[in-house]
Length: 261
Image 1: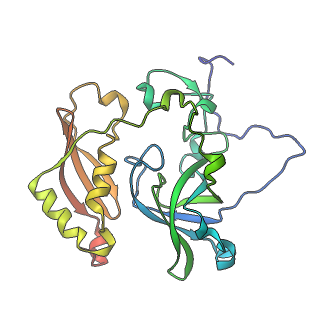
Image 2 (image 1 turned 45 degrees about the vertical axis):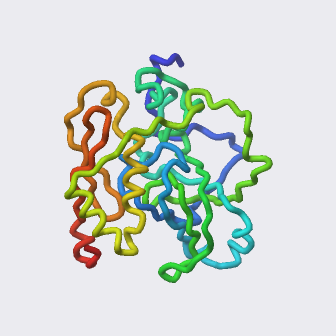
C-alpha cells in the first residue's frame, strides 16, 4: 500500500491464530484535563497532579506493596476516546506543522491499531481516596478518565538512554509567554485559595505556554478566542504577537453546585 492509498482502518488487523488475550483496565487516571485540547503532547512537560484509582479487582494495598521505593512509573493506557475513529498507516505529526506524513509506528499518534499509549509519571505516594487505593502522581499527559491497563516501575539504569536519538522530537517544545488580564488574574487568585485548585496558575501557564493550537494556526494572525477545560473551569485565552493572554476563567455549573466557587 502506498502513502496515497493509506486508508482508515476501523477493525483490528487479524492476529496470529496462536495469540489470544483480553485486556481489562486495572485503574482509571484522574487528571485536571477534561478535554483532549490542551493536554501536553508528552509526559513531564507540565507539573499537573493527578491520581491512579484502582478498579475493584485490584483495589488492594498488597497490589502496590513496595511501589514507593520508585520515584517514577510507566503507565500503559488506552486512547479510549479515539478507538471508534480507527487508525491510518500514515499520520501528520504536529511537529512537522501537519504538512508531512510519517508512518504511524514512527510517531506517537493517538490513533493506533490497538489504541495503546505509554507515559512516564512521577510517583508521590500511595493514598486512600474515596475508599480506593490510589497512587498520587504528577506530570501525566492523560485525559481525565483514561483507562490504565498496566503499571510498571521506571528503572533509571535501563530506561534512561542518554545518547538516544529523538528524530523529529529531539528537542523540547519552545515555550511562549503567558499573560493575564486583571480580571483573569483576580479570579484565578480566588480559586487558588481552595485546596481543589492549588497550583492552578502554574498549571494554566504550563499548559498554555506550549501553545496547544493546531500547527497551521501558528504561522499567521489568529484572532480566535480559545477555551481549555481544567478541573471544573473553562479558561478563555487568545494569542497576540506570539504572546498568550488569559482573558477570563469561568466555573462549570457542576462546580457551582458543589460549592467550589
